[in-house]
Length: 282
Length: 301
Image (cartoon, rainbow over all chains, first blue to last red):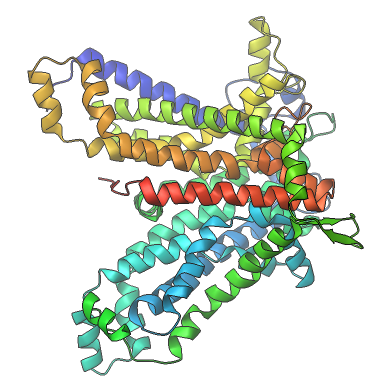
């Protein structure tokens, strides 16, 4: 190891601290704004330290009448977003692990066709089939439903590829041993494959939860009514920079409530998150 | 034939006729209904000309593509997208690389720095955009207040270049975390002996970086370039929609925003479908590059 001169290390620390200030500042300032009165926010510059309205603003947004967006409470928005994020994460893992299981541990006609059909969806994001997909949603009556928010997003080439890759590293002896012992495919799946996949599932879950939580175009398309909006879409509806009526202090509370849950997931499950990120990258 | 393949791969499998189909059925059903059917429709509609109510339509072959590609607004949108994507990718990667190199030098506090650095990954792009607009909007933004007091006439709501700078900042800010993690992983994979040898030969730090470390990071850099381009092209729709709405005066109208706007707001169906198909070609090209050329040997610690 090459010794670093104390000065260079000091410069490195300074650069990192500056970097973190840039990275954290917008989030910190949102928090500061969420603890101020509307009047304070409207007269820039905003103080650098939190104000004394924390309790008032948050309770107003969560439980009060004023924090409502078109008659919908922030609590409802959080519920919608949580349902969507969990549904997308669990759904993607569920159907991907099943398809990967079939493709790796069974031999059947059209096996590789199915694999390619799943793989090619990588090249068909919503943006390239936007109107016809919307029409399908309308025809199936899935607008403004949780099923509509979740099901069309849970096909996952990335997750299927990841599980397939992992399954292929599992030695054939293990399958053989299971079969000799009289274990059928389900027994093998639940007693051997699933426990072995635990780390992969946890890692993937973090990435997919964030993916579901931060969706924008999809909920914008498939939710019209205010009480089915996700918190991100509702926030966009609340903000108007031209309009003097924007309730900035409540907007900032909503913004905090929209960013804190996924940040907590990433920070608390950091080990899985980093692993999932690096491994799920195609 | 299938048995041969089985032997070759030494894979022991379960003999079942129906079960595997049931296992792939859910995923397949979703891809067929929500991916292939609409994608096919987009291809078909891109060659139709329809009135907005869908009452009459005519098969026009490639006329929609010719029309779209000759449209100055579309060409402008291509230019905007290229500028936006390149600027976002370069800023996000340069800042992340600098920070990753600094993080390699410190011993104490490394884990803490990483924890603090990954926050923006969890922030939705649209919210990232709104936070930056809150800081930099001309009427109540605290940082625009600072800019104005420095004598800069800052107004992203009226000035196109200012709007673009704001979008790039927000988009790049969100992506720093991601790039940082990959660069840290890439740097850890650089053999220390190589750097030590260069140091013994008298190469100074800057020289060591550009002649040894940076070239060895090339696979990571190239991989991130593709990922960041895809991010800037597609995932930033929320930023554009929430912050500028393509304005002022179409100066920030990216390709994806335009597809949405022409299809959903202006209801020009044939054009929107043709634009979708052009985007499809771009995605296919990028995915092909990613799988063909990008080395996937990036590992984290």
